[in-house]
Amino acid sequence: MKTEVLNSVSDRLNRLSESATIAMARKSRELKAQGIDVISLSLGEPDFFTPDFIKKAAFEGIEQNYSKYMAVNGYEDLRQAISNKFKRDNNLNYSPNQIVVSTGAKQSIANVVMSLVNPGDEVIIPAPYWVTYEEIVKMAEGIPVIIETSIENDFKITPEELEDAISEKTRMMIYSSPCNPTGTVYSKEELNSIADVIANHSKVIVISDEIYEHINFVGHHTSLAEFSNVYDQVVTINGVSKAFAMTGWRLGYIGAPLWIANACTKIQGQFTSGASSISQRAAIAAVSADPSVTHQMREAFRSRRELILTELNKIHGVKTNVPEGAFYVFPDISFFFGKSDGEITINNADDLSLYILNKVNVALVTGAAFGAPKCLRISYAASDQELKKALQRIEKALSLLS
Image (cartoon, rainbow, N blue to C red; front, side):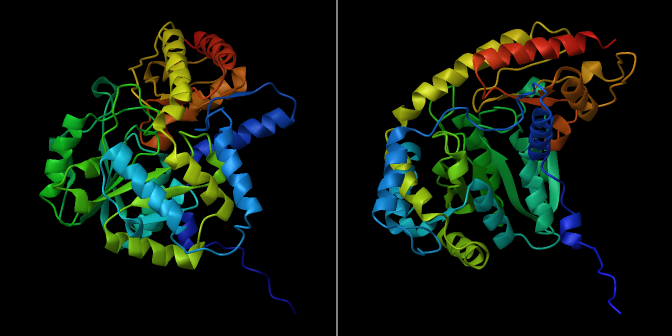
């Protein structure tokens, strides 16, 4: 007699939450499949196409038969191109052996965390944070230590707050600048102060997520690893998804101390091996290009930021700041907690995001997923027409709450 199969997943999986951004995107697709006119402002994906010169490099890779296994950490000529990019754009000296190419910046971050964090190690994460940071730490059985910030301070931590969060168990800090979900950009002076704190704690490694580097509205981007007193404690994360509209190509990379790069190569060798050969050939063209090729897209995002802030600021109860990078606004919407349209009572940001989706068919993401339960994330990686239409719908839905 056949025994019943035990449908039980691992404790490791049960510790994880589903990505809120992916979950909302899925709900949007389901509604669209039903013929409903949903406007999705939930995913962090540029609505531009990959530039032709990058696509051409991919075609050449196919024609040149780049179809075999490559080194786990990436083709040497791509790692050399990334090394050149780090020097050109960031004043960082990473040799090709200090670079590991992965299937997206998400895998790059996971490689670092899984390579360095032991069960019980503490990982400092300023909130709001990208949803995946906390989940990767949980996967590694680390303990997330959250530093809360506020919209009044542009969602930035202070050196004093960082110092207070560091303990004997602290192994790592993870942050992004420009930030997903807030668009916050740390200045050179602010990062210098953070570097001074980190330098006093030699055991602490910092993951500096710089994937939005080129979508920066305030001038030159500063990398934390530029400060010599912490260069050996910083892993710089980057990739081609955002600046070059290559989200589907799945190509990210790190620059790191050699021992960390070697550790990430080892762990990647047992999970995925090297990233797609054709994506790597395309990435050579992307990272080798003058950064000015990204400026047209950056300026389009700047214009959209002004549009969305202008419209949001017309809505009573919505509190905004001015994000300095990326393509998100992260308004505080706690004014609406406790309010009702007569049928639905809004208790939190989760309720409000679902209310807006069901009432006016606009998909946003609850700030709770990013460690900021008073806020919503709105992506403005959409056309001006769609943004205007979406904001009109949002204003209508909020006007019904009292």
